[in-house]
Image (cartoon, rainbow, N blue to C red; front, side, top):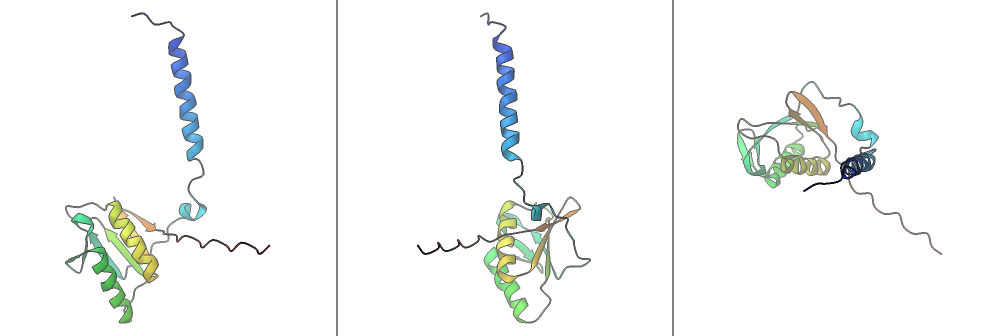
Length: 139
């Protein structure tokens, strides 16, 4: 069937407007803290590798997130260094979102800094906790 020539420019205009709206909505979503450069240490207190099913390899033992938290807490209680941790890609497994989320929760709870190495680049896992709402002033 024949379509009027006016239809194509309107489609193009609608597509451009949609692209501009999406670009405007995504601007400024990252905070200044998220954009700050990473100051990676020269060495790490603990090094983990990502394993399948969201598990971690810690000292050649596959651990779930709960078990890893317990092992790192024990390490901290024993007075061993626990300031920085590096998560690397496993031999057959890549670092997944489940690894990052679990490690971020553990890092916040045990108060250490976690880093992730992917494709030769080291990034810090920066987690924020929800701020408690301020109490309403009395009327």
